[in-house]
Amino acid sequence: AGLSVVALAAGKKYFGSATDNPELTDTAYVAELSNTKDFNQITPGNSMKWDATEPSRGTFTFSGGDAVVALAKKNGQLVRGHNCVWHNQLPSWVTSGNFDNATLTSIVQTHCSTVVGHYKGQICKYSPPHSWDVINEPFNDDGTWRSDVFYNTMGSSYVAVALRAARAADPAAKLYINDYNIEGTGAKSTAMVNLVKSLKASGVPIDGIGVQAHLIVGQVPSTLQANLEQFTALGVEVAITELDIRMTLPETAALRQQQKQDYQSVIAACKAVAGCVGVTIWDYTDKYSWVPGTFSGQGAACPWDANLVKKPAYDGIVAGW
Ligand code: XIL
Image 1 (spheres, rainbow, N blue to C red):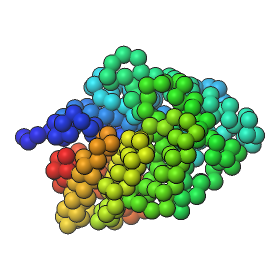
Image 2: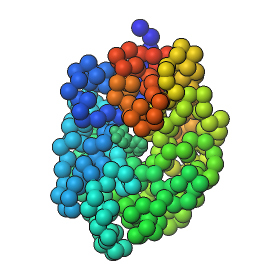
Image 3: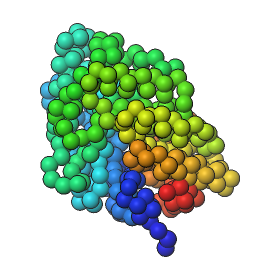
Image 4: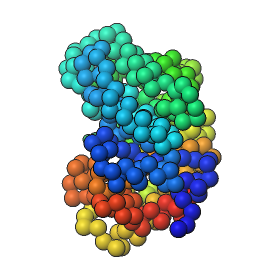
């Protein structure tokens, strides 16, 4: 039967999958998600986001996130919290509230401390969650700050406000800034380096950089490993947080073989970098991938097909570890 993914990662790094609450009624899907030979970590794909957790000001709902955490605990899997502050999936009371700096600062503090505090670990190694994407997608691709309600109201101070609130709420959680198109070196990765440097210089808590890795078949950046190394040289850990590798449909045997190589390259880069703590795929099956709904004409990005059958990409993951 071969060695399991988790055994190959040898206990040094985790390998996990995102999931989403509607999928948890699919018993065949949940059985594989709960297979701890393949996955020892889970990320909730939607249910810890702002629109889900604080749909109206000061009213918090945790049922969706709690269900994912309960599954992970039952399975003995780590959880990554995702996410506290992001420009997407915000309730309209945040985006349309026209709050001033002081008020939005207080709103961000309350949101981060309540959500992170709710999931504060208490018991064991697998206490939920063990790391948090506190800040998600702060930059434009050219490395400038994204113009969203947080930046436009608070300037870049929102990052420190959120990180400090998260640290106070759960001192044991690893606090991350997570973004896409920071897989290879370039302007956006340089912006992340400069942000982490300035946070550290100011004594703001920051433990990790999350590299989303929503990639395209045949286009894994050649500078991936060097870039992970430049991040860990800052004194933070890195994680591949949302890996999928999409293709223009239809899926062909040749594209599947290239995809296998690409998954292997990404895993091998994390394996080679001491400070890369693990890899999460953004759901494991094409049945529930976000890709076709977001990138027109593209899909087949996951290592399991829509019938939950392993594709060559799975063997690439095994080979990469
Ligand atoms: C996606 C979810 O997978 C979808 O179900 C949802 O409709 C949109 O968000 N970057 C992120 C994730 O940080 O939260 C996004 O997840 C994918 C892109």
